[in-house]
Image (cartoon, rainbow, N blue to C red):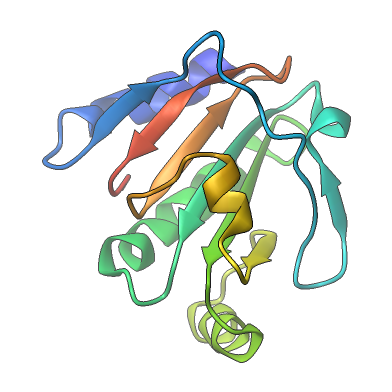
Length: 148
């Protein structure tokens, strides 16, 4: 499954501004136990068996907003039993996140990283960034830049 996701994303790598930052084999992986804005809890360890994309975004980031429909379509196409896309919002208030979700029709699970702690744990400094995690829970890298 993860190979399919990588294949789908590979054409975007050649686009301007897209970089794949490989995950160092000795780098720690965050345990990631978070609750989304609807109250559902997500734990990375419990997600084994399906690929996971952690997409770090903010509504002030135009490339983030532009790529969101593509990520949502990819998640819908693959099905949540094969691929989970978690949209991790960076340091915005709950009302701002809620307004964006309603305005855009976003149906992906949205995590509010109100203090930027999750982004810091994953080494995210560029927005948007998407962490690629395979079905066995192995991190393959971070795509930095807009995926559309």
